Length: 417
Image 1 (cartoon, rainbow, N blue to C red):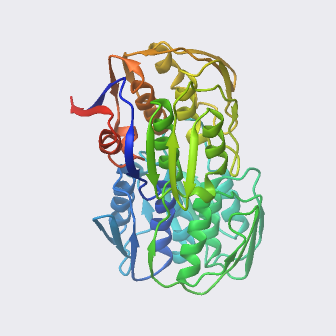
Image 2 (cartoon, rainbow, N blue to C red):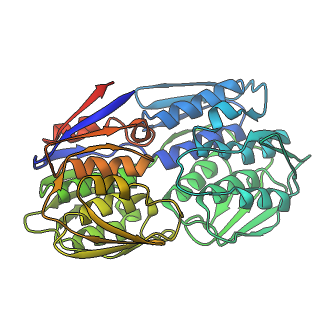
Image 3 (cartoon, one colour):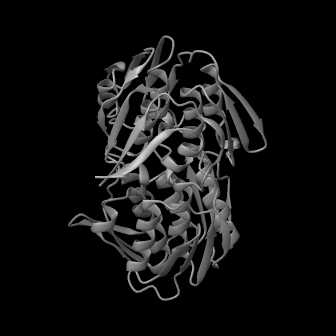
């Protein structure tokens, strides 16, 4: 099992780029199940989760392979409509095959999902929406079994704007009979990317990126060639690395249209951000100023950047607060930061961070994807060498981030233990 050794004290300088978005490409791969034929997707990040999704498609009988950040998926001869436990347990996004399988084939058998242990994250809204579309739903032996002769358009109001739920129901409704309206839909840029993908296939989706999405179902969709959006969370993580090391870096291919609140919070730390198109330069000279953050659904501050901002606040010049409103267990990195000398007190869903001048190196363990990135940032400003274990979490969502950071001057190495 690999681990990172991060040596603190290096200032990041130079230029890097953002890879394709994990949270966008996984729904696109699932949406390929809506068609019969071969689709091509470019700008795909080489991540553990992407490889898992490709294996899942292959197990169903699809031809799916990846080469040089391009993926080809051919669903011409799909043999089964099942997502088995062994793969689904490792990646929550596997549940995204439920909607397209039910819509395209009239049946699906999908294991209840796993993934990062950051909260319950039930899929009840997915199931409620599919039932509203006319599917029969049964839970049997840890599997969801959905069946429908053909889904029928309806109005679905989500209790909360779930991203995977909105994506699943958009895919299902794209082949339903009639019009479907999703109220209180998730507004994330990745939802907009999925809608563009389906519309290019011949779908009819309007309103993606707003709280009201309207889908007029069509009889069939066609395979296409498409390029996935860049990863706004990776972009934010790289920019945060520039701030915490008091560096000067240019991050290219940032999807800045979906990053407004993150860029504003980074500026609030005292950093200078210069935006030219989709390229962002971050320069940091003085002390890091404390910032208060409250995570919210898009366009609010993303929960996926909460841990990275907490790392920044551990060395800020004062007291910061972070309120986590999305997931109940997303402060598991706090205990690891404390091992490095961070002064953090958790009170329910709020963390109070009193910045210190410097952190101390320690052996730490990653608990989830974004916590891994948080510990890397902390390690880059800690005295000594920080050993970060269980970085397989990091590999789920960041493509060889150690190479990008090393090219900017970070002292970080991957070690096979």
